[in-house]
Structure formats: structure tokens, C-alpha cells
Length: 349
Picture (spheres, rainbow, N blue to C red):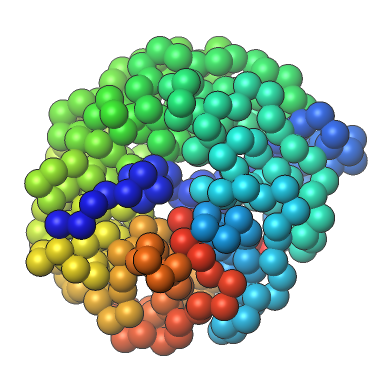
């Protein structure tokens, strides 16, 4: 089995939070940005373009649907980007190794930086009030900032041990996946956040998680021997089912419009290029396997037309993005231009 690199291990479900509304503030952020980000009535922009966080290239590249050449490249202030998110009017927030940088919708110009209380930030998520939550890997904390400001509301430490992924359920409870701690910590809605419970059953070195429309939790466990995806009903602390069929060092997770679960497996059964395995709702057996064009995949995202986009790292060669039509395992397109170690793929304006 190939090594599980730090970058792949630390893959957070950036694609899982890319569509969550974000309100971030920072020293140096224009007041107009803060005011816009805090407007709950603002109409979201259509998420039609593909965004890629290139950790190796220190860029975020943007592509129009069906194209293979960047529409624009964002590099101003970008450093080892792990993931990104958008606010309600399309401003882009990039999680770098030291800070979060902010860009106006459709722009490559840096307009703000959030850097206070950052310590190897790796994940970002926003609650219903647009408060921003940043998981810091080195200090095992979550820093909570008031929407539209750089004001620190709370630093969460209880229940954390190497947090690498964040998510919210419909009730506003916060979920944090701990890689070293092999757990998922859950915090009550509201402020201040307080630890409600911790899930350990079935968890082993989680790297990603996702919640479905019923707040069922899916956790991607990369621990040996081959990993697993464990599924927890809402409010449960023990898995209702465990998926191991077709799983080999699982990374990113995603759902298609029919509720099928897609899993990016960094390697395949004999330790080579990897696969994307697909599971029907409620099932643990593989529905189909996508292998054409796949090479150490870590991230997944569905575009507005239902095409699947896969971020393949194959670290020695820089990586690429492969695209597949809805319901198909046939390779439709490969994007190489501007791609270097694509840790997160997602869609935005």
C-alpha cells in the first residue's frame, strides 16, 4: 500500500464546506466586504465554475464548465491552500497554511486576510449566522470569529485532537473530525459552543465527513488496514453500517443528485492508482467503480450539470482533474493546465 502523505491525510472536506455561506472578517478587510458578507438576504450567485486549490502550485485555479484552460488564476496571498469557501455573494475564502485570504467574487485580487489565532489552519465552516469556524491542526483548536469581523468569539479546545474536518447539521450542531484522536466531537448549537458528545465507535483516523439531508453522518476513515466509511444516524454514537467493500484508504466523499455516495479511494486493492467507488442509498456493496483516469484521488465535487470532478494528486507528477458524465464511469475530460497537487475541488461563481 502506498504511503498516506500528510497532505492527503490532512484532506479536509473542503468540497463539503465550499457551498456553505460564509461571513469572515479580518484586519484590512474593507467595511463594504463585511457589510455585504453579513447580508442574509443577499441572493447567492450561481455556482457554475470549477475551483481547484493547488497546494503544490500555491494557487487557486478557476475553470468554466467544459473547458480545460484556467479562466483565471488566484495567487495573490495564496500559500499551500488546503480548501476554500464562498460567502452569500460569492466572495472567496481560501484556507492557507498560515491564514485565510479573501477575494471578491470573480476577482483575483486579495482584499483581506484573516490571521489572528491561526495555527496551521486546515478546515473552515460557517454557521447559520455566518460566524466563521477555523480548525487549527497544530494547536488542536477551533477558533470562532464573529461574522464580518476579526473578533474572536471563542476558542474551542474540549474534545479536539488533530481536527481536520468541520461540518454543521440542520440543527446547527458543529461536528469536528479528529484524525489523531480517531473521533468525531459534536458541539451544541448556539454560543458559546459546548461539547455534547464524542463518537469513537467505528472511527479510525478520519480525514473527511459529510452529512446528508437527514443529518446522517458519513465518516471517511483512512486507518489501516484498508480504511472504511462509517454511517451514523442523526444523534447516534454507533454506526448503523460500515462500508468496506471497495474501500482502500478513503479520502473525499460526495453525494450525487440521486443520493448515491461517492468515495475517493487513494489506492486500489493492489496498491496502485486508486478508484472512486459508488454506493446506492443505504447500501454497503459497490454499485459501480470508476477507475479510468483515476490516480490517487483525494477530492470530489459535482457540478451544476451533474458531472463528477475528481482531484487526482499522484504526487510525483503534479496531479490533474478528471471529469465524468452523470451516472458514467467513462472519462469525459482531463484538466492539467494550472493543476499542481489539487487537494480540493468545488464549485463557485
